[in-house]
View (cartoon, rainbow, N blue to C red):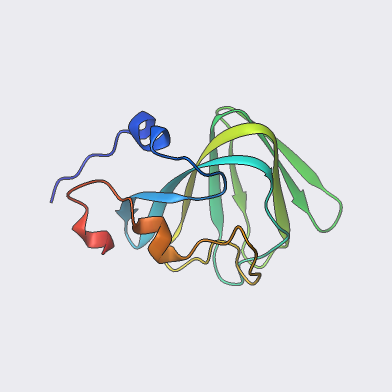
Length: 132
């Protein structure tokens, strides 16, 4: 199948902050889009790195050692596996995430914002049967 996802159209579908949607699958890694606003939750992913690409806006990535990384439009940042982190968007921020397909949204923590992998693939582009 030769599916195509248009990022502007995918972002237009998002009505809820902190709710990633899968738009592609590459070598067992999901490419996700999300709109962020406010603070997610302190968490870590024991076995998976996460790549953040900032499409629009700014994001602060806090780390438990007191270090914060300020990301702006066009920046790419990788959160290393097994690293406590907390993303904060003071204004709406649009991101693309790349992470292994099995990565849990909020890692080792459950919160009201946590989305299952099934929820994240529910709105995959048409022709993307590999997600289901």
